[in-house]
Amino acid sequence: MPLITAPYVAPEVPETPPVDVPEIGYAAITYIDPSGTRWPMTDITADWYTLAEGVSGMGAAPYTLTSDPHPRGGARLRHVQPQPRTIVWPLLVKGADHMAFTTNWRALGRAFTRTLREGPGILEVARPDGTVRWIAVYYQSGWDGRGQTATGITWDSAVLTLWCEDPYWVDAVPVPVHREADAPGDFLDPYPTVSSSQVLGDTTVNNPGDVYVWPTWLITGPASLIEFTHRDTGEAFTLDPDASAIGHGNLLAGEQVSIRTDPPSVRYENGDNWFGALDWPGATLWGLAPGDNRVTFTLSGSGAGSAVDLVFSPRYETA
Image (cartoon, rainbow, N blue to C red; front, side, top):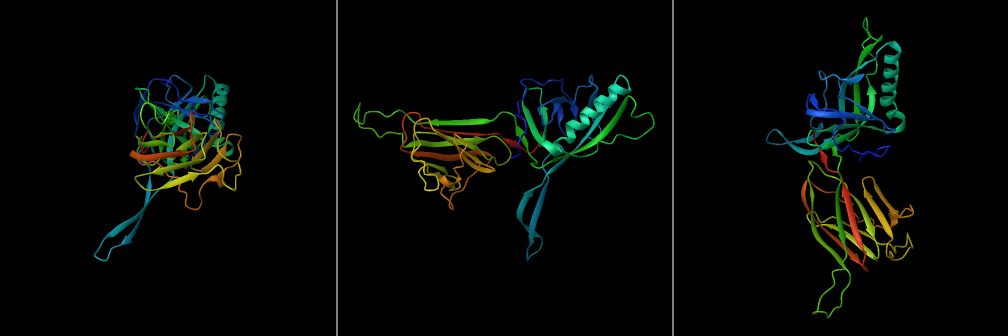
């Protein structure tokens, strides 16, 4: 998933009134540059705003299909590969006088082109119901102006091409899942029982998005071995804090390890690399398919406070 240079914080309500945007419908759109500065794109009372005519690339992600010829005619689909998305974004810039226009033109040009040096910006789409989706964008071309008579004095327009390495739109509200071990009880009180502290449980995690997501995990000790199993696919991975490559020993109460599945990363709470704590080469850092996913979290050596948390942001074909 794309990295955001500045922390992304979605607004509680759209900053500007929604307008009708081609391929999207009614929405308030904001561009967030790599420094975190927010630039409203649909406020027609501002000195810059999006020109509705010409907007494109906001629909479903593009795909490349790989097929094999079929002996009886036609072909059979072998592989589907999502491709980077290109968004075309026409923008009008103006000012009360030439220097006010020039200041706005320079500032907006820098806000987009700095993505080539500092990391992606964010194009954010906020709906009237308060839901927000975003996509990471890089400037590709287009900040040229029209080059016609009377332009470049107090107004001009540019047709930006924005390149998106991940073609999917991301929900601004992450989905958290928390499972915590019960406090151990007396085996004979009030009747013979088996503690659930070894198994945080079989659970169903719902991915409301349109495509796979790759969650981030946080494990809180105490624990001696942690297993993560996707029961629908059989994929699994195990974290062993006492693995020879780590040499840490069991996780103590309150100690934490985070596992990121895309790109893969395993970090102890102090930042140490714990990639060697996974059960390679058999480990599969699985993702979550759209809809319900049956998963199991198992902790050995767990106790009061042991917990597994996962968080993911649903991804969608369209804004």
